[in-house]
Image (cartoon, rainbow, N blue to C red; front, side):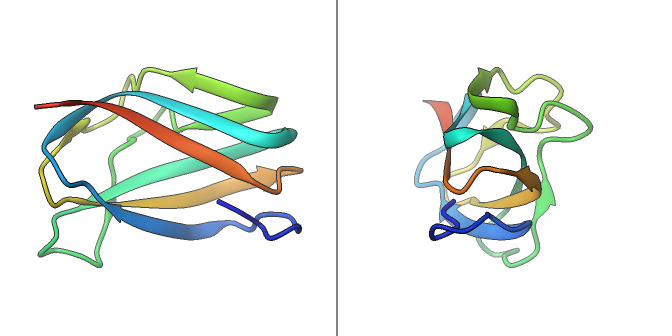
Length: 110
């Protein structure tokens, strides 16, 4: 997610199509500078796209809190199982200071 030299704004920042069935077992956020960001991860079947629903649930969204890096297991996520062809959307819920951030999802292929 790149603000192009400016502050990142909230809202949808892009989509990926997951090519294989997998289970997400870790997320990592790395930023260009210390700051704060909260990113929601949403999912849809390919046929159900563009409607997406959060898989993060009530807690443990990929987050930086006055930091430049953070990683954790996706505890409390409503779903970590991804079906081949599922579409993931990344939505910035809140942001301060950070101008460029990478969110990585580690997954074990089913």
